[in-house]
Length: 152
Image 1 (cartoon, rainbow, N blue to C red):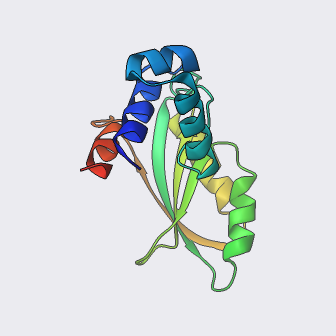
Image 2: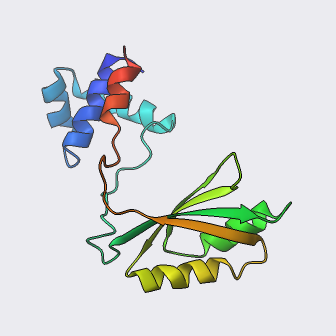
């Protein structure tokens, strides 16, 4: 990734509905250059999507929790498939240490979160959960500082 790629991505993030012509104008390059760069970054998987960022809180799910899971030996795939069926689980990451998976979960209420965790535990592949409710977001998801660092 070079400086133009980084500036392109930062500008696209700041103006998510921007067209290629306007993007080219802001960056001071030809429209064809912008289109080729966007296609290249998309093909490489740097740009993952062009959809809107949706706020779970504003969509009716104000509770955010991080739920750690311990999985029965040799049953990781089974556990992941069971988790994939739960719409309130936004992300699942394999981890090192005493826990096997970390799930980012949203819920309508704390009681709803308890129901979600109880449902997760119905899978025989899941042995134990440990959850933490987020009280606030101090630094929201961001990528711009990483992009700036990538070209230095």
